[in-house]
Image (tube, rainbow, N blue to C red):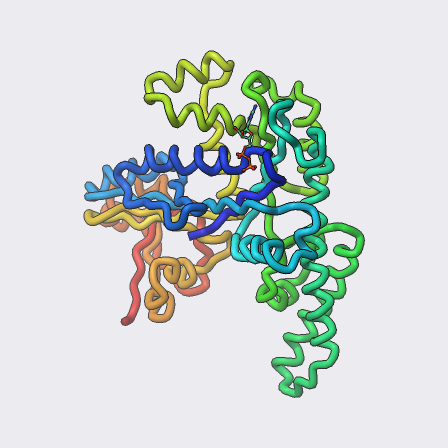
Length: 369
Ligand code: GDP
C-alpha cells in the first residue's frame, strides 16, 4: 500500500499524532485484518461510505477498505543531509515513502522546548525543505557527472539518458535556488527518466499545523497557522489543521464521550479523517472497487492508470494476462443493483487495455493465467 512519512523537527508533536492515527485506526478497524507492522509503521483505513453500500448490494462476507501506511520518521534535524550515520538513515526512510506529512508546531507551550528557541513555522518549514534540497542536490550532481561520462551506444539507452539528463539539468537549477524538484515541469519522458532516483523533493507534501486545543475552533486566528497557510499555498502543498494532543486524548475516551468533548472545543469532528482523506487526495490517488459475495474491496490506483495497471494492483498475473475489464460506474452499479442488471441495462461496459480507470469504477477483470 501507499506510504506517507510523518516528519518534522523534534518536539512538534509527530509521535503524538502518529500514535493517535494508529490508535484511531485500530478502533475503526475492528472488522478488518489490520496490524502495526513495525513500531513506527501503522496501517490506516481510508474512510469511504461507498464501501458499505456496495458490500450490502453484493451481500459480501466482508468489506475491505483502501489503506495507507503511516510511518513516523523521527530525527530530521538541521544538518541531516551532511550527517553520515543517523542523518542518512532517516533521509533513506523518506526516500521510501510516497508522500511527506510535515508536522509544524503552531502551539505555544513554555514547558515544551522548541529546538530553535521559539515557535516559528516559516523557519521550521525552511529547515526541513533545505535538508531535502541538499540531499537531492548531492544525488543529482553525482548522477549528472555519471551521465556526462556515459558511453552508451544503444540508441534506446542513449535516448533515455538524454531525457534523464535534460530533466536533471532543469532540476539542479531549482535546487541550487532552494526550490523543490516538483516545482519544475517535466515531459513524461523526463519524469520516467528520473523516477529511479526517488528524489525527496519530488514527493508531494502536506503540512499539518499542530495547534493548541483553544485554537481548534478558529485556527485562522492563530498567526502561526496563517504563516503555514501562506507557505503551503506558495509551495503548492496541502494544509490540514489538527491538535495532536486533542486527537491523542480522543483515542482514550469512549466513543460516546468523544462528540461531547469535541463540542466543548467548538468542533464537530476529529481531524484525523480529514488528514487521511487529504493524504489520499493529494497523492492523486483514486479508488476502484471489486465487489462480490466473498468480499467488496476498495483498491488504490494513481490517476491515469490503465485497466491492466489497475488489475496489476490486485496481482501481477492479472496485469500480465489482462484480456478485458467489465466496468460500471459506482452510481450506475448502485442504481442497477447488480452486475447482471447493469449488463442488461447496458451500463456495464467491456473495456480494453487502453482504458483509463475512473474514480469509483466497479470492475471485473478477465485475464489469462
Ligand atoms: P515529536 O518529537 O515531534 O515526536 O513530539 P512529541 O509528539 O513527542 O511531542 C513533544 C511534546 O509536545 C510532548 O510532551 C507532547 O505531549 C507535546 N505536544 C504535542 N502536541 C501538543 C499540542 O498540540 N499542544 C501541547 N500543549 N503540547 C503538545
